[in-house]
Image (cartoon, rainbow, N blue to C red):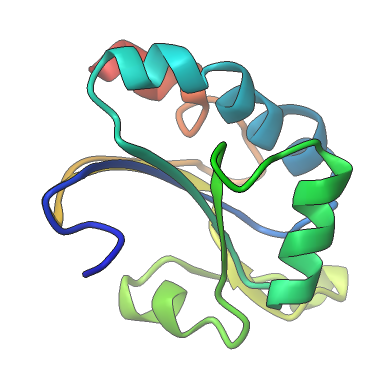
Length: 134
């Protein structure tokens, strides 16, 4: 509730911090489009991954993400991800249970847009796609 109450939040999820697409395109896309998203009424940009808080912090540091840029959310046990039904079995890749790649726009706790990637794609969950939906 603290994150979503009374706010417009662009939330995106990645299968794993430090993974290639997540580090090269997904997180940087939201960093690069912060001001444009804010201009369209987004109060907070948040990134969630099934990783621990230390990994998320190190990933943010490695990407030059400041505390006021993107809220980095650790879903260490995958509880949030399972509760919203967007878990991904990545055991075949040695990654265990992870999150599907998606983006969503949440206004005052209500999901208004949900963009879930199919397979290993990176299209509809991008910052640019979400921005076009605003």
